[in-house]
Length: 399
Image (cartoon, rainbow, N blue to C red):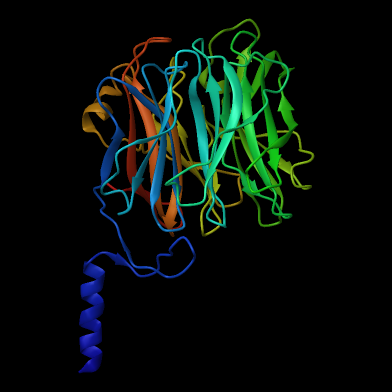
C-alpha cells in the first residue's frame, strides 16, 4: 500500500514538471520548475536600440541581464542598463543604469562574470560619438548586482584609434588570479587583435595586455581576430575561441565562406598561445562555454548570403571544441519575425549569451534589430528565453 502511494506521489511530481536533479548555483540539489513557453522582451520600446545583451546567474539564484540601450547601434548615445529576475525569467525588474550615455562618452558593450566567491565582474568599453573606442573600464558587485563599485579604467593600449572592443567573460586561473580576453578593431584599416588582460585582486584592477593573435595576411586574405570567449579543458589547458573574418585584399564586404570561429590554446595560463585553428562557421561573438556535462555550447549568428548578420543558431561539441554539430533550428520565437526572414532577412540577430541554470536547461538572451541597410539606424530588441539541450545531441527549444 505504501509502495502504491509512493508511486502515485512520484507521478504527481512528474506531471507537475519539477526537475528533481536540478542544481542551484552553489551545487546543492534544488527543485526548479520551468515555464516552457516563457519568452520575454527585456528591451523593446519600439523606439530605442536595445542590443548586446549579456546574462549571468548570481549565487543567490537571481538572473541578471545587461544591455546596451541607445538611439543607434553604436556611438556615445548608449548606456549600460541592468534588469533582474528572481523567478527564473517570469518577471523582471525595472532597469537600473550602470553607465550613462553622453554627448561625448557612452557605453559600447561589456560582459558579466560571476566568480566562485559571488563577486560579479562587469567589464566594458566606452566610445565617443563617432564610435571610436576610448578605453576599457571595470566595476564589480559583492551584493548580487544590487550595487556596483566605481569604474576603474584600463588604459587604452597603443595602436589605435580603435572603433570598438569586445569583452569576454573572465576565467579564474590556477593561482586564483583572473584572465579576461578581449578583441579590438580598427574600421578604417580593418586591423584587429585578440589580447588578454589580468587581475590579481579579484577584478578590482587590471594589468597586462598580452597578445594572443594579431592581424595577418595569408592566401590573399586578411584575418580579423576580434570577439572571443574562453573555457578550461579537462586537461587544464585554456582554449580561447575567436571570431575571424577573412576579407579579400581590397574588398570591403565579407562572404559566407570566409566567416569562421577559430580556437587557440594556452598550456601556461595564458602566457603563450598556439596558432589559431578553424573550428566552425559563425560571424559573431562565439559565446562558447562549458555545460555541466562537459560539452561545449555556443549561440551565435547564422551567416546569410549577401548579409553579414543572420539568425541565432546553436553549435554543440562533445570533444572540447575539436568537432561541432551546428543546428538548423533558429531560436527566434516571434512568428512575425520568423516569417520575415524569407523576405530578404528583414530581422537580423546581433549578439547572444547564455548561462546554464540546471543540467541541460539554459537561460539565453539575444538581441536583434530590423535590417534597414548598412549604417541605418533601426529599432533593436533584446529577448530572453529558455533552451533545453536533450541528450546526446538533440536540441529542442522551449516553444
